[in-house]
Image (tube, rainbow, N blue to C red; front, side, top):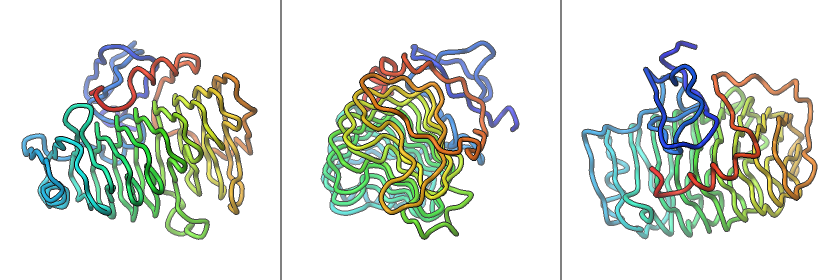
Length: 320
């Protein structure tokens, strides 16, 4: 991989990060909780830059939000206040959607990314969605979902499916919900999903949620790194339908089943665990770790026992 396109997943929380040409400087081991660009998969395939920072629109109403999100203009959409919407609002390519302050976002509906490219969603509150809070589908590529606070939706909080690819989900706080994050929507969709659905989940906080953190079909490899799981009802990470998932240096606290290799009616998947830290938590299930493909980017993970402090300090809104 060319140096100008590499990104490093980093090891500990601090106030700043020094990057040169998109590569962390030699010897740099720590980074802030607010990266200026995505790490992991969203940094590949040409990178994810979002909308133009020179064209900025601030919205305070549902109608203005819907118009700005669907516009063909490359732009940054600033969401001011908690805006009630109905249904799913479509997001066009080349958009950055960012909340103003720590309490701005949407309630009652969600965002739908379908067949688009190069979208950033940051610093938004999502509440009481009538369907998914964030739905990424239909071969959408290069998406960065970062520093959001999501709860109390009807279906998934962050669902990624139907051949979508090169996505990073980072520094989000998910709480008070059942089905958190689906990766691959159906057991019969292998023709579209195989070779795609490559996602990095890093520095997310799952708090009092029940299942799907994530629940994976077909994708290989999926990287679940340095996340904090607290008081999880059913299970943490599930790998099914021959997927390959690396669950690495996460912090599991009060989680009966940190990882499982089969759920529902799906065939089992492959799952490899590496140096996770557990407090009052059960045994991790693993299966055929050799079938989990190598992670295709450089990174330096944080030690599992440090992840709780890092994530609780940095995840959610108001931190960027």
